[in-house]
Image (cartoon, rainbow, N blue to C red):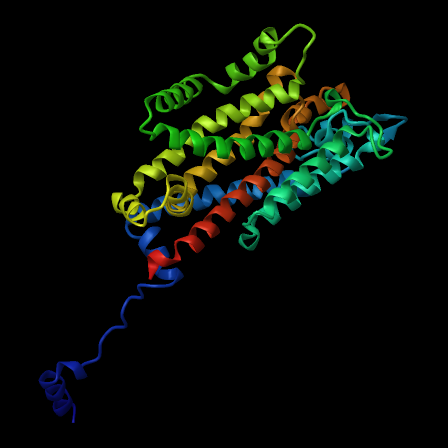
Length: 380
């Protein structure tokens, strides 16, 4: 019987037993192809995994297991010696519990903290509303106008029974959101106009746009902030003064506009020439061709660099420290000036960094989803 079986197997190779095929899809296939494809990759993977696990264990011990969450008070003075006795073995999160209001809202009047808190909520709600594609119509214009007006009323006050709070008392997260939101909201349309101007056939417009972009991109943001804070008031008529926050906002807007203009111009140059010729063949005007055909495709192509620039400028708002504006990071630095809390800067920076991470990760994740949705037709 065995001889017959062997003869049958030899005569019909397909009947011979075969090994199971190696899976080319799934998690195990990905791990095999990317992390364990060779002995060197396997060694590097195991070494990095050991470092990550060791760091994770150490961080959990420092941030949670050995951490101090509150300290006793002697009158109004916190007794932070209990944290110092740890000698770095555990975090002292009591500094966040004690200073979180100052970090988030700066020197804004303590009893009025509900106002900047509501402002932060309005900003987040505005972002979420604007991110929904079904609202990408002209309805966004009045929504933004009304929301920003309410934000201004809440922050300044002076009407509707709200006490007046000067801009010098503003600080923390609202300042960061105001500078980044207003800056990018005004910089983006400016960037589109400048990008179109750089491709214009009119020499005067093209030269003006080129000079603006190269001049602004050729200097650091710090120099523009210094000029806006120190030099710009020298050119104003005597007795006229512009708010320091507004001057910083103008500098950030101009700086962001120059960088975004180059990103938009890259998208315009990436489009095939046939798109322009097809639009001309339809008899569309310049603005119809640009608004309905060219710009939507160009912006779709440059979503990743656009969002990368947005994230960068959201973090660059911390540079307003040099002109005396208390943004989120500056408020965090100032919170640990008090002698009782000196030496606990790591906890404060971790807290501030977590806030930046939440906003930046949300922008990054949204851009990935938006890019995938807008480019579905390319995968068909």
